[in-house]
Length: 223
Image (cartoon, rainbow, N blue to C red; front, side, top):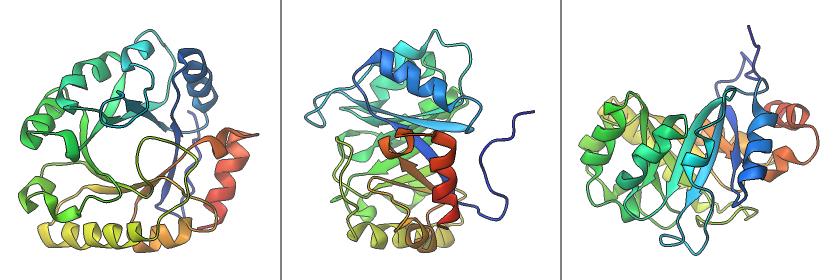
């Protein structure tokens, strides 16, 4: 049985995040994650929601050995991408609310495939932009800690307040959703992000620069 990097003393999960327009690079990075971590996050950007474009989830339909895959959809009408993500071996599918006309439909369709459904908020989008009842239906709430669309950006402190609000909402509604922080996460701020209420973080290319396992362990040691 594979022993993944997931220290028993810490509930926080560090998830490698991949943002690329190259199918070859995506395959290589997924391969590096296999057997090291249980889960990886793949960013999908369609060039409409944000001025950038990445791979299509279907490009992963042929892989045979892979970790659990999250698809973070920064796209226009995420519901239209659900079936592509299913073909791309999705375990969880997270859609941005800014370009989502019907959140219940999105959540229902993802759940209908037996997958985890998540909603994401861009840096400037208030957490209060959706009804509290929705929080009872989701598996994950993702907070962007930088403006979405591009990697390598610096963490914005305003994200702390949003994470804390989501933590409060979770207690209020009694929902079991996880809180996920994405963007600008470093060894210097991961402890504060965890203390604010986040259960998971996405970390991009800095994890893949050198030894992946060693880099992830460095983040865990910072908690």
